[in-house]
Length: 373
Image 1 (tube, rainbow, N blue to C red):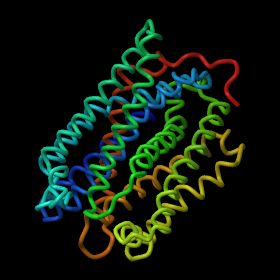
Image 2: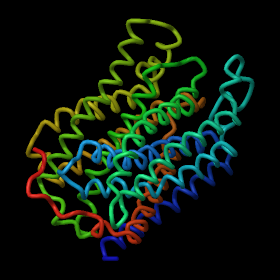
Image 3: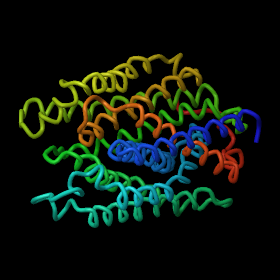
């Protein structure tokens, strides 16, 4: 482990300690709702990035990509978090469900047959069992010394399909169900596409941050950065398009159960500033910035753009989750931010440890003479 990686690891350990202490202190001081809503927010955020890493690799396999096998390996190595996500989900449903989900704290009326702790837990575990088992099987075949092209070719489409179906259900069960009246048939699509957008931003940041630490200089250059930037731009348009498509239908339909959800976030304090910053900062601003070819070809500038997008996509999860859970005055931030810092530290620390056991330089193919431009 080189010096820079040691520094990053120590910083991650410190962040993890801060997050754990904040979470425990929030529970001890009667702020369970804030602790568990931050827990749910980050569980969904980081699980989405980890699973989308495998989906990225599977899509690369399906399309027979040649432009950056190294980014593919970086992405699929995020699978390490998938078993952790299952454990974190069980902890949430066993100990935190009543603090977050209205239907777990009291009678759910006509929705009770679908929204109850045992059934939601069972559905969540079933989704994880299917999606994660297919994903881990794909990664195993992909990373074998003598790569089994036949099996990876079969498993790759299954990974993508299972992800789309499974994460749509998770979006409905763990986010949309937080509001007792709101529903959107498009939300599942928006939920998993947004996770993939976050993954691409994560790759932009990590490709720059760990390029030297992991000895990947000869594998990652301006051409790969440019191609990744184009993907990031495309999914910025797609995710923002899904967001706009939902709100447009709510607006012209003018149905109270749908419009009320939007009004609370975009037109009422204290959440309106966060919602508008997330919308313009997460989609409009990146759409303009990523038009620049010079920026996309500069790994450091693309990493800055990716870091900004990650913050905005975290804020996006905040906007959908917190107003439905928090019933106190004002918009809660400090506890949520500190717990999120703990999740960030734990995620990066785990990734570093995983990649020490299986170095990316042993998996990354040599750069091809020409990439996709």
